[in-house]
Image (cartoon, rainbow, N blue to C red; front, top):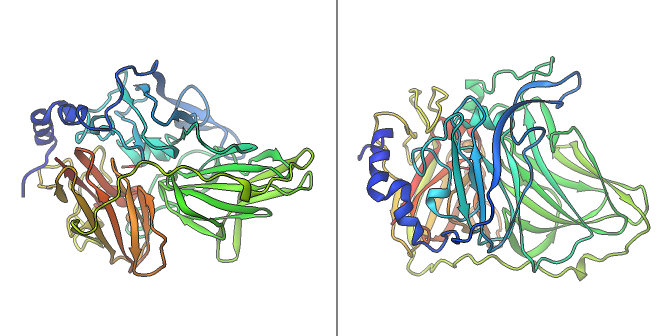
Length: 463
Ligand code: C2O
Ligand code: CU
């Protein structure tokens, strides 16, 4: 197997053009030259009020205070940001779900160099798709994301239907002790299972915040699961809620929300029809068995607008190329546990264990050991990933740089939909089709960060 060490990666990248620049500029996802004034995104260590009983220290964010801002972009319009690193750790920004040139993808060693303390990196791209996305570092991620560095992106489409209000929810937990301070981010025995859970749940860094929305109005509710571990079973209690988009892409056919499982990395967009009665409260919940946990509430205010979700125009589909199933090459992908428990270093920061594997290989990443791409794909050709989960846990598997269509599952009926993160259940087999239309090296990994960091990572090369 070819060797992918840090040094070799740098060498390979140099050959391909500095971090894929040579490859990507020609690609169809290249940013426009007339990029906007860059938005400054400076990482910082702050204190924040997350739990009762005082400020939590060592919280990490983008900006000066509080939650990383919701970053708004416009479909088809150039976006630019300057990451300035104000924390003690090297970092990068990955724009989860956005199809962009490889050198803008924010994966240290694979697509760009580390951004060290005090240094900066300029990102520029044009989002081709509208929807709800998010951003986070791709470096020492358990620590950096666990301590706060997860923000939501809204890509607006001027052709979007008009809602009466919009609520954006960044859902995540924090691992805090009784004194409100961070405790160890993970326990190895949990990393080998479903991952280590936080102790405090928040929506937009608050416990059970309430948002006002017009009575009888239609709310565009955008939910992003940015936690490092928790899979949510999301439901709305007290209002009619219609699923309009999943993972940044409109669903082909809207449907009423019952309960939807969403793993780390996933997003959900709902049209929530507020109750007519002023003061009525709608609960947004995570329900496990019969035990609902309220995450946030919406309160109806003002005279009823008497809106009807059936009058709401549909969202326009994103311009994702359809795979040609007749000519597609199949890529088998088996998610399993590892027998041996050797320490592996993941790209950018190690947890010191290996519990998981993709096609039997636990990702050694930043070590002298070999890791070849999972598959070498031909630019412009269609592929189907035949993914099988032989572990007793669920895994939200995320592909960078390209969106796929979920074609079929062995365990449930699916109406094909476009996504970038598929939550595969134990013993499930699923088919994900896509066109390899974006050149470069693209990560494919579990978004339960402890799984990602202990072997469940790989990448595909498109050239
Ligand atoms: Cu949310 Cu590798 O990404
Ligand atoms: Cu996993």
